[in-house]
Length: 113
Image (cartoon, rainbow, N blue to C red; front, side, top):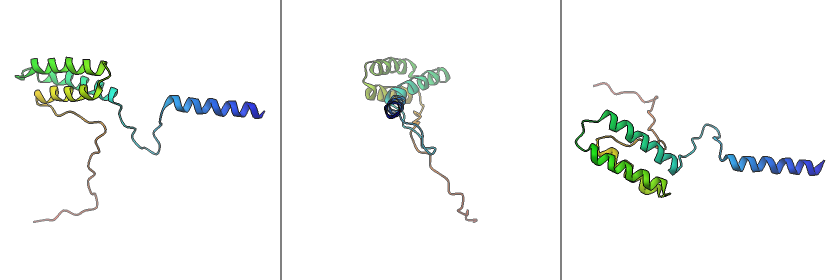
């Protein structure tokens, strides 16, 4: 019986290590660099569609291809920077999923003139 318990505990521990960290108490899990690459690449695709008339579209497409190559070759940091440059060329600010949005103070009172 004890051997079965140890085996079960080992199996459960192994599963928890394989599945990775779980959000605890509503805490947000940080985005990996590979996920960030994919998110930025999608954002560039959308930006190129909506800003097709931008003067730098050709340069942005070239940077997107270069950024995708970096990401595919496990050089995610370079890929992220390159994809962000592509977005900026068409006038779009890269969205950072891990950025903390400022909270508004609901209890402060506005001063009236």
